[in-house]
Image (tube, rainbow, N blue to C red; front, side):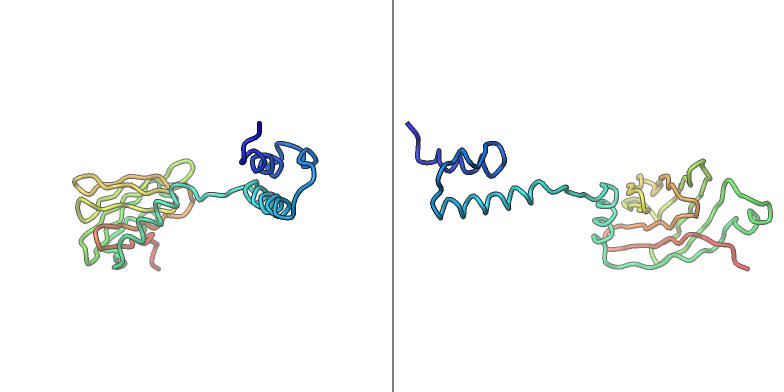
Length: 171
Protein backbone atom coordinates (compact mmCIF):
# COMPACT_ATOMS: atom_id res chain seq x y z
CA UNK A 1 0.00 0.00 0.00
CA UNK A 2 1.36 3.41 -0.98
CA UNK A 3 1.55 6.19 1.55
CA UNK A 4 0.46 9.76 0.70
CA UNK A 5 4.04 11.08 0.34
CA UNK A 6 5.20 8.20 -1.89
CA UNK A 7 4.06 10.02 -5.04
CA UNK A 8 5.98 13.14 -3.97
CA UNK A 9 9.07 11.02 -3.30
CA UNK A 10 8.75 9.52 -6.81
CA UNK A 11 8.61 13.04 -8.29
CA UNK A 12 11.69 14.08 -6.26
CA UNK A 13 13.58 10.97 -7.42
CA UNK A 14 12.71 11.73 -11.05
CA UNK A 15 13.75 15.40 -10.65
CA UNK A 16 17.12 14.35 -9.22
CA UNK A 17 17.64 11.91 -12.09
CA UNK A 18 17.46 8.87 -9.83
CA UNK A 19 14.44 7.48 -11.72
CA UNK A 20 13.20 8.05 -15.27
CA UNK A 21 10.49 10.69 -15.61
CA UNK A 22 8.47 8.20 -17.68
CA UNK A 23 8.16 5.97 -14.60
CA UNK A 24 5.85 8.58 -13.08
CA UNK A 25 3.10 7.98 -15.62
CA UNK A 26 0.58 10.72 -16.25
CA UNK A 27 1.14 13.86 -14.15
CA UNK A 28 -1.41 16.35 -12.91
CA UNK A 29 -0.74 20.03 -13.61
CA UNK A 30 0.41 20.52 -9.99
CA UNK A 31 2.73 17.48 -10.21
CA UNK A 32 4.18 18.67 -13.54
CA UNK A 33 4.81 22.13 -12.06
CA UNK A 34 6.45 20.60 -8.96
CA UNK A 35 8.62 18.33 -11.15
CA UNK A 36 9.78 21.32 -13.25
CA UNK A 37 10.54 23.35 -10.12
CA UNK A 38 12.53 20.48 -8.57
CA UNK A 39 14.43 19.89 -11.83
CA UNK A 40 15.48 23.58 -11.91
CA UNK A 41 16.57 23.32 -8.28
CA UNK A 42 18.53 20.11 -8.97
CA UNK A 43 20.21 21.82 -11.93
CA UNK A 44 21.32 24.75 -9.73
CA UNK A 45 22.57 22.40 -7.03
CA UNK A 46 24.59 20.45 -9.59
CA UNK A 47 26.57 23.55 -10.61
CA UNK A 48 30.17 23.64 -9.38
CA UNK A 49 30.71 25.64 -6.22
CA UNK A 50 33.67 27.86 -5.64
CA UNK A 51 35.04 28.76 -2.26
CA UNK A 52 37.65 31.27 -1.27
CA UNK A 53 40.90 29.94 0.19
CA UNK A 54 40.73 29.71 3.98
CA UNK A 55 43.69 32.09 4.35
CA UNK A 56 41.89 34.74 2.30
CA UNK A 57 38.73 34.39 4.40
CA UNK A 58 40.79 34.71 7.63
CA UNK A 59 42.53 37.77 6.21
CA UNK A 60 39.26 39.45 5.28
CA UNK A 61 37.72 38.73 8.68
CA UNK A 62 40.76 40.03 10.51
CA UNK A 63 40.87 43.21 8.42
CA UNK A 64 37.22 44.04 9.06
CA UNK A 65 37.45 43.38 12.80
CA UNK A 66 39.40 46.61 13.36
CA UNK A 67 38.21 49.85 11.77
CA UNK A 68 40.98 52.33 12.72
CA UNK A 69 44.29 52.13 10.85
CA UNK A 70 47.50 54.00 10.30
CA UNK A 71 50.48 53.42 8.05
CA UNK A 72 53.79 52.74 9.75
CA UNK A 73 56.70 54.91 8.66
CA UNK A 74 60.12 53.44 7.95
CA UNK A 75 62.71 54.76 10.39
CA UNK A 76 65.64 52.61 9.27
CA UNK A 77 66.34 49.85 6.80
CA UNK A 78 69.25 47.79 5.55
CA UNK A 79 68.03 48.07 1.94
CA UNK A 80 70.48 50.80 0.90
CA UNK A 81 73.50 48.73 1.99
CA UNK A 82 71.87 45.59 0.57
CA UNK A 83 71.42 47.33 -2.79
CA UNK A 84 75.07 48.32 -2.76
CA UNK A 85 76.06 44.67 -2.22
CA UNK A 86 73.69 43.31 -4.91
CA UNK A 87 70.95 40.80 -4.18
CA UNK A 88 70.29 40.66 -0.45
CA UNK A 89 69.39 37.51 1.41
CA UNK A 90 68.40 39.20 4.69
CA UNK A 91 66.90 42.67 5.07
CA UNK A 92 65.98 44.52 8.26
CA UNK A 93 63.52 47.37 8.65
CA UNK A 94 62.27 49.38 11.62
CA UNK A 95 58.97 51.25 11.55
CA UNK A 96 57.12 53.64 13.82
CA UNK A 97 53.33 54.03 14.02
CA UNK A 98 50.81 55.60 16.37
CA UNK A 99 50.46 52.19 18.02
CA UNK A 100 54.19 51.74 18.59
CA UNK A 101 57.39 50.47 17.01
CA UNK A 102 57.48 47.56 14.57
CA UNK A 103 60.57 45.66 13.48
CA UNK A 104 60.63 43.29 10.51
CA UNK A 105 63.30 41.01 9.08
CA UNK A 106 62.86 39.65 5.54
CA UNK A 107 64.81 36.49 4.76
CA UNK A 108 65.04 35.44 1.11
CA UNK A 109 63.86 31.86 0.46
CA UNK A 110 63.85 29.87 -2.76
CA UNK A 111 60.21 30.75 -3.49
CA UNK A 112 59.68 34.06 -1.68
CA UNK A 113 60.35 35.68 1.68
CA UNK A 114 60.23 34.56 5.31
CA UNK A 115 58.89 37.51 7.26
CA UNK A 116 59.86 37.64 10.95
CA UNK A 117 58.59 40.57 12.94
CA UNK A 118 57.97 42.24 16.24
CA UNK A 119 54.57 43.97 16.59
CA UNK A 120 54.03 46.80 19.11
CA UNK A 121 53.08 44.20 21.74
CA UNK A 122 51.04 41.05 22.43
CA UNK A 123 47.53 40.57 21.10
CA UNK A 124 48.30 41.52 17.50
CA UNK A 125 47.69 39.51 14.32
CA UNK A 126 49.99 39.74 11.31
CA UNK A 127 48.25 39.48 7.94
CA UNK A 128 49.84 39.04 4.53
CA UNK A 129 48.27 38.15 1.18
CA UNK A 130 48.79 34.48 2.04
CA UNK A 131 48.53 34.07 5.80
CA UNK A 132 47.12 35.27 9.11
CA UNK A 133 49.24 34.57 12.20
CA UNK A 134 48.72 35.49 15.82
CA UNK A 135 51.65 37.21 17.49
CA UNK A 136 53.05 35.51 20.58
CA UNK A 137 53.00 37.00 24.09
CA UNK A 138 55.92 39.29 23.18
CA UNK A 139 54.39 40.45 19.89
CA UNK A 140 56.56 38.28 17.65
CA UNK A 141 55.29 36.75 14.42
CA UNK A 142 56.66 34.72 11.53
CA UNK A 143 55.19 33.80 8.15
CA UNK A 144 56.29 32.93 4.62
CA UNK A 145 55.13 34.84 1.55
CA UNK A 146 55.55 33.21 -1.86
CA UNK A 147 56.32 36.23 -4.04
CA UNK A 148 59.41 37.97 -5.43
CA UNK A 149 58.72 41.43 -4.04
CA UNK A 150 58.96 42.36 -0.38
CA UNK A 151 55.46 41.94 1.10
CA UNK A 152 53.27 44.42 2.92
CA UNK A 153 52.12 43.31 6.39
CA UNK A 154 48.94 44.40 8.10
CA UNK A 155 48.98 44.27 11.90
CA UNK A 156 45.57 44.08 13.56
CA UNK A 157 44.66 44.34 17.25
CA UNK A 158 41.55 45.42 19.15
CA UNK A 159 40.29 48.50 17.35
CA UNK A 160 43.65 49.19 15.65
CA UNK A 161 45.26 48.43 12.31
CA UNK A 162 48.82 49.23 11.33
CA UNK A 163 49.84 48.92 7.69
CA UNK A 164 53.52 48.01 7.49
CA UNK A 165 54.48 48.86 3.90
CA UNK A 166 57.11 46.94 2.02
CA UNK A 167 60.32 48.96 2.41
CA UNK A 168 61.98 50.29 -0.74
CA UNK A 169 65.29 51.90 -1.59
CA UNK A 170 65.05 55.69 -1.66
CA UNK A 171 67.15 57.46 -4.32
